[in-house]
Image (cartoon, rainbow, N blue to C red; front, side):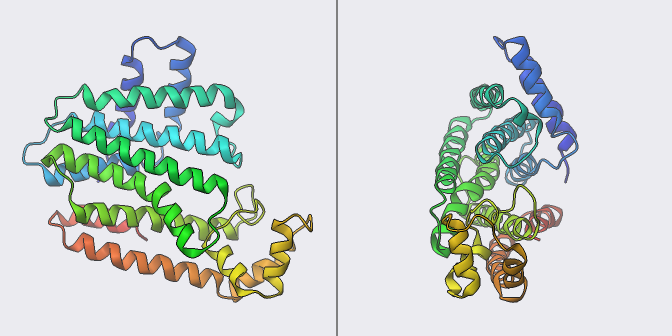
Length: 298
């Protein structure tokens, strides 16, 4: 289940065939797309997979739609990196030009669905717009860094990350049958949450620019430490409030590994995984497709 090369070529074709693009901007967009060439295009693959499973007559135009979905995700990734300033991707070297390029991608891809021959393209376009806005709402909450409880944090992640996976799956389903499938809606959102929690677990253990502790951000393991109300949480609170300028990383990491914070985050992840698997098993589709979806939850 791998359409990466097809989607990569379609992404480039969309940009190459878009009229009225300034030459430097077109070249810049193609350069950004090149960064995706050797990476799994999960969102586009999910779009094609769900279209294929819910349609009786396959329309190869779905590859162009899935490529547009990948362009949307790429534009969001660029904007996210520019806002967080915690990566060294190619677009971070010229933030002003990169922001302009991301905006251009959003406008370009919005027309791809409407220019297709799909019967239900207007419904699919509404799905894309609705869940893209949900993801932006989630990003706003993340930037505010105000989600300091389990409930508020998981709600933010559901919006920010879950909405993009949901969008990818439901666009495929709607183009195939004209309506959403509630089971797909549920498990796709859960997949986004699972992947974000997995990223949180990984990020908090690595000491680099993306470490949430060093950046004074909140994630499930960090929220767990704060709620324990012990010496480590007091030290962390002082660091987050700027009362101390240096965090004792070894002191905090000991609490992460041996105080239950990572176990807690993994338990939440596993709970979401069990829920998602129940929905997946209730959908009629090829085992190959189910295995691809299940692998995204590991």
